[in-house]
Image (tube, rainbow over all chains, first blue to last red; front, side):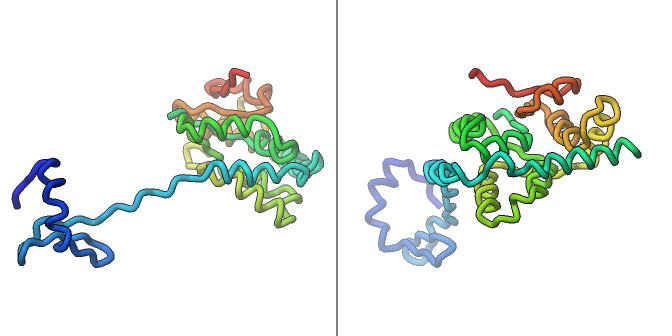
Length: 86
Length: 130
């Protein structure tokens, strides 16, 4: 396999386009019967959508009130009492 | 990247008021300057609240936690939590949160109950510029 620099690759890119194969998993660039390049494309991780996240959280306003989770805090205190008795 | 350990008080504050430190943490997370870590015991605390019986409320809670990493309690952290509970007289749940902050070096704890945690030697409290 011959190594070429980026400028040469750009120049030759369109001339080899008809010899590019993709089977859904692997990309293969062939010249005649010889495989020139073979690689598995990496899918970029989808960026987390913070705008949508913030908008979704805005809807929280008015759904919870000061009584929400107060039972949880009481339970925490009683659990602690049991530990103290250990 | 700084690791921030989240106490339940921060999450509850946001859910009740729609305001608070949480939004500031989200901003920093978006800038990739911090990593938000929720100890598993905090998840247990939150889910123990009857409020979470309401599926709509549970959905918001789940959505909030989407940008966090839930950290399980390791054996070392459990032992450290016991030691903290024994020596500093905090609740067991708080001791588990504190041990998570202590064992993960460079981690800082963000909480509204500063007075409960400040007495635990070795726990760094996250301070905001506000």
